[in-house]
Image (cartoon, rainbow, N blue to C red):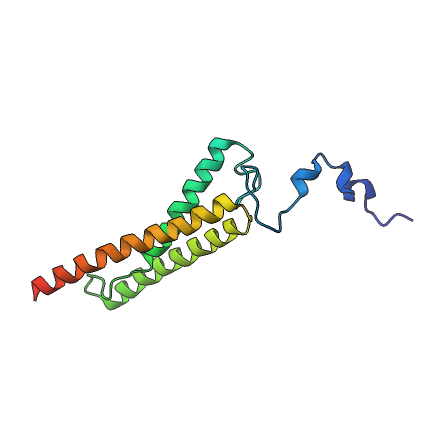
Length: 140
């Protein structure tokens, strides 16, 4: 009695995938053979892996930079200012989820790129904070 399923197509051994393609890491590992955010990316290529590291680094830094939103946006309408802040917040949260999902690949290179990106972004924000306070104090 067939239930309408092709049992051979359900068998992972009959697919055109090697066992290493189907393996998902559940502990940290080193190597360029990772799947980060999208199936087939970076596809085992060293150049694409370095690009993935750089992208994760930049997105993590952007999260920290976007976390500092000005108290008031320079528009005359408070609703427009609130809308702009809401959009920046949505982008920041979206980036944060993307970095989290990238780190969940359990690749140590991606993990270190994310931590370094967050640290760099935090540093850039903190370096600018005294400069902004000095500008505000000089205007008063």
